Length: 71
Image 1: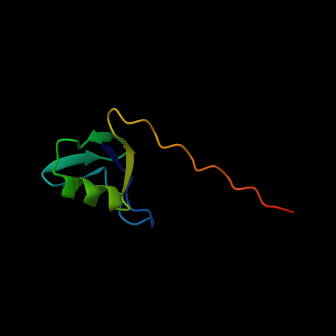
Image 2 (image 1 turned 120 degrees about the vertical axis):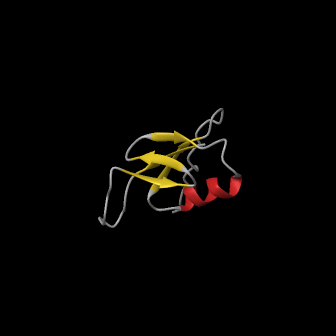
């Protein structure tokens, strides 16, 4: 899995990078976190300051099909 530090979504302090779990995450750059423990990966994925950008070897999820309304 890769994540990208995007800064504070509310417009607060947006530094050039952040250090978490002894790893540097520069602003706007993908960082592969596949070697990190699963709990840390989940924390990063759930953090509003990060965007998950993909998992190695996994295709992106297909969008859900739209339901047609009757009538």
